[in-house]
Length: 302
Image (cartoon, rainbow, N blue to C red; front, side, top):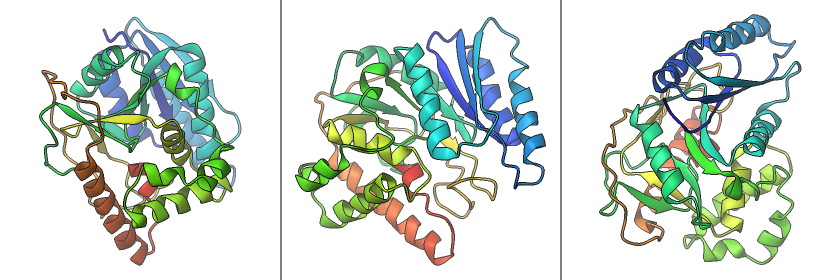
């Protein structure tokens, strides 16, 4: 039995949902929250796909309290996921969040559990990631390192951190005016790139929820935990995806490796070298995909 609540975000992809659900089933969580966006009437066959996806949850066959937030109408990525996370943290002090295309290594769950407990009262730590974008490079001496980036392909957090989340980013104008980002990011290119994404999210030009979460962390001078081995494989790079629409990305179907015994870093500080590397890798992939006319996945990486 897994004693941390899990929020499972599903929509219209029964194939990937079933694979991720089987990993959840293996852990047998005592509490499972399931949030599903509604189908779009303009998409032929989506109603049936959504219904089939939801039916997978009915196969829970272990001792588990299942809570559902099933939308009748389609809200879109931004509203559906942000409101689902709000619902989750209104009911739970801490927990794990998985989307229907984020296939975890089994040790992802134990990693999150240990980090949730170890850093429960460390206000500066706001996010626990499952994904690692260092492509085999080990950063520091611990089982994980600290980052300014909130990778959201399988993650965990606390109510104490999520309370700073604002899907409308009302604090962004002040953040921009005071140039707070200059104290967070040293490289001008990264500052310009991310400010541009924050600006678009603030103005509602991007139907997403995750830039807002990264912004909340930065605005609070918070940090994220990144495992030194990749614990999440995104299996959703296809035409059905909202943001990750191609398998040609180097971030698609990344291999995973387990983390068993946890070794903690000696200090809590950003690993700048790791963050610089992941940014450069993401931007190279972003422009490579853009040249091919493929949707931006940058926000799904950070």
